[in-house]
Amino acid sequence: MWNETKRAQYLAGLRAGISIILGFIPVGIAYAIMAGQAGLSGAETVLMSATVLAGASQMMAVGMYAQGAALVTIIVATFVLNLRHLIMSTCVMNEMREAPLGIRLLGAFGVTDETFAMFTTARDGHSNSMFFMGLVTCAYTSWVGGTAIGVLTSNLLPDLLSASLGISLYAMFVAILVPNLTKNLRLALLAVLTAAVNTLLRNVMDGSWALVASTVLCAGIGVFFVPLEEQGGAEDAR
Image 1: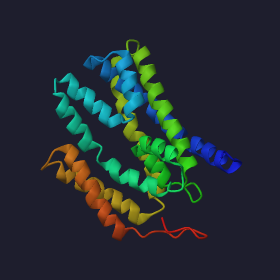
Image 2: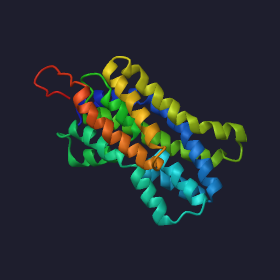
Image 3: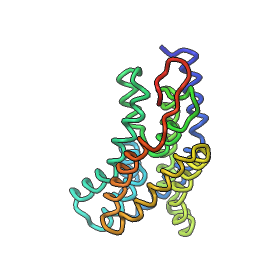
Image 4: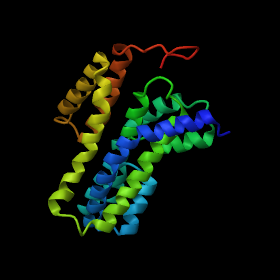
């Protein structure tokens, strides 16, 4: 039942998700421009965003499509790139065990790097399904909306501006993580270690596999390196 507590948590998620909106709209525009250049129609471009909701994977997929890659190759590459979602979804669903199945399914669809980062670094009291759904609402509407804007305005934007929009995704992710990492030295060191391991592995293997391997390896290290903080009341340690 929709009560005041759930409503307050959902609204808190919407407020927290404003930074996602500011990042996703320009990236959605950049993706739409890339998709148009690859030969996708406007409807196909928007439909892909509405059903996939994965910025980096969509950009990689349309880039491979433009280069003439086989469908099977595109599917395998995006699958490998998104293996990290197994880890992220597990963490998110662990905090949503009491939510109805429908909410959990919607939540699973809405797990992105940004919603995961904001959810897992949110202050105590916001580790619940309604807060996460507020984040997902911001992410989904801004991503699909940004894609639609890109389809409609792709012919009007200068080439330099179009090319620069792609970095906003990374800038947004850094802006989300850095303030929270400054509060936990060990977590900050783990993030630096993950980046370093990923950089080293990219010299000896494909970039997609390097991302997966560095994430899994450093997540395992983090289990022992980063201590869990006890929450108040009868809650378990996160």
